[in-house]
Length: 227
Image (cartoon, rainbow, N blue to C red; front, side, top):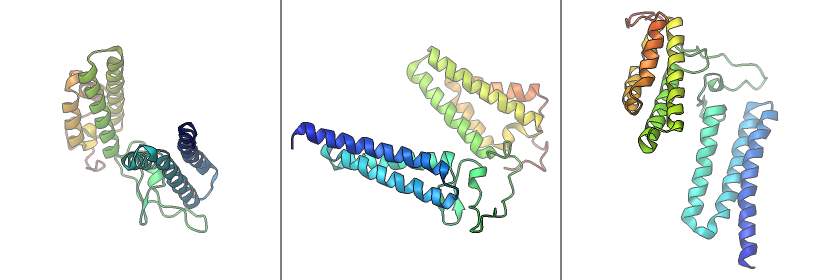
């Protein structure tokens, strides 16, 4: 077997693995039962990761293991952010509140839904998750600003982050919540991470919150706020 032929086989294995993973992801949209869709998703990515790892064996075992871990990490991250496919025991671990609901019962009926946290954002995302998402976004943009300096791209990303913070400030004030919905740890981290952006994101949040009539008294709507 020539090197060219071997290289072609490895390429076929790799792209075949990628195709299986992507096809499995898309095919779950046509599966009615969540349990079956979950099995299809993880089986397809198990096969995909295996094929992609085999495709890199010619570069050494370490490379194959690294590719397998990367494929698994991508599958896990996508499943957490976009689906109810991460299940630990009887608990669904998901980014959004709708995806965190228990699986339907065997007869197809919906199980009793857990109460939605009163401080959630539109019953879709908990306050803690949204604010940690803002922290991650701000850290990434701040690091880009330090690494790349003031460029059109970093200025645009900083402006986008500031607009997001301002919109959330408007929402918090209009719905009668305390500042940052009492997510003070995340807010402090966001302030620190925004130093490369001259504190514009948290200032945009506070300005929008104040302009929309928000109260900076921490006892405001305390009966509905949660930590």
